[in-house]
Image 1: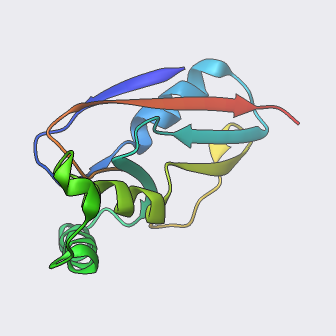
Image 2 (image 1 turned 30 degrees about the vertical axis):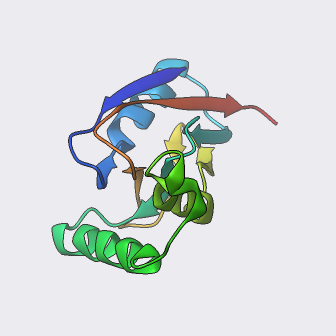
Length: 130
């Protein structure tokens, strides 16, 4: 299953938890693993709290990790920072499902991290039975 997310800014965090939960509910699968994967090299998937200040903190830290760097890739396509951050964060997460529900902490939500937007992003959701 895939969902499509349209991003609006160059860098932003978009909570996709409800869309993932909807896919799980429609599947009627009760116990498995859920792979959430973004097939893009300038986006990522993270689990974090959906709190505005924390989302801004994430963006500040990510920007700081790559600021003032002179990336060679920028001579081709001015988005080397996006590729680097995507690789560091990772393009996918595997989350257990028990009783038809995602197993996650109280404050954990699933986020698409846009690092080179605005764009239209695909998110692949794969349920893997053991």
